[in-house]
Image 1 (cartoon, rainbow, N blue to C red):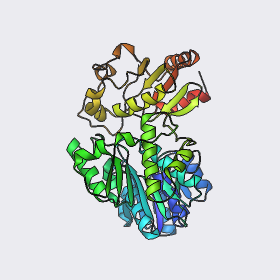
Image 2: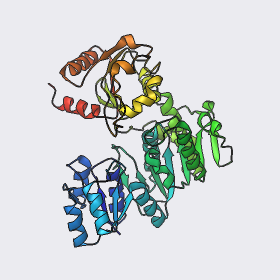
Image 3: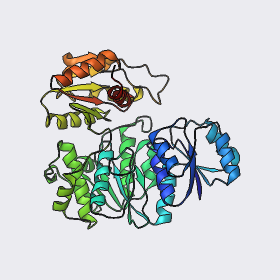
Image 4: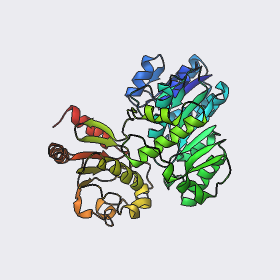
Length: 419
């Protein structure tokens, strides 16, 4: 099978392209500009183009017929490559449809990590444990790992570990062998207009799983009481030497799965996860007293701040809300989620996939119900904010920069070329 990946420089498509290449498929693709991922793929022999006008796809199809055109939900319907694929009669599929094909063809058992929060870290933990046990492993995770590529295929592997995302109902393409449910709140209003629809999708996903392991607080209200659903109680959280309650909960899920699959004992899981190096943008230490985190939901914010409090009693939070459409859904949840922060710098919302008819909520509107709003400074990504961050670090404060937008890239650029 010959596969063309549109947007292969991104964290969603890129790892899948790595997997396809490892699995022996003829792989090529494109992106708008170079990235670390696209450069890595090119170095491994994948044909990469930075022309997305449709001309490259036509040229590749002429050279050798393309069997699948793979894209994400972020690709607009009028994208030139998507239109070219239709004109050429190439089967166009989203990434999870293709991954499902690969899993079936390679006879891999899926270990799926799903949930509103904590998917990436928990997936990283599962991968880490299996690697430390020297087990052959195939996997895909939506971030950068310090201990391996973001996506990999080993022909000797029995299992495939996957960060299974609910956005665009992606996770409903799978029937996992084992599913780990990190948490179930409410998110992605652009896919699920109501909380009931969101919960219904998770219920369907769990029912499609041969075994699901999650927390009773999430599963009990859903009425899922069959033997193939393990409802873990809060007192079952294992004593991992990891900062953060949610980190210890995520590690417990991994240990339970490892025990069920007869990979190792709980004691061995505790030993292995004590050395877990973490993943990119999940409470990632960039420098002394400076951390970057992907969190952009009030529940995630509170959990990450709780973890930070186990390390420092003085926390400076720099927060960039993500998506205006999402802010309309969560604005009433900005109450006590930031109480662990001594100082807060609140940035304008990072805009992406917005509804044109929704008014843009201002920082002043979003902090209206915040319990410690007196600690908030309205800020922008500029020299003044960078100086405030530097001063806080110098004074011993743990600075946590949080958001799923461009705050992380801005931060890394400043560390390389401070102004």
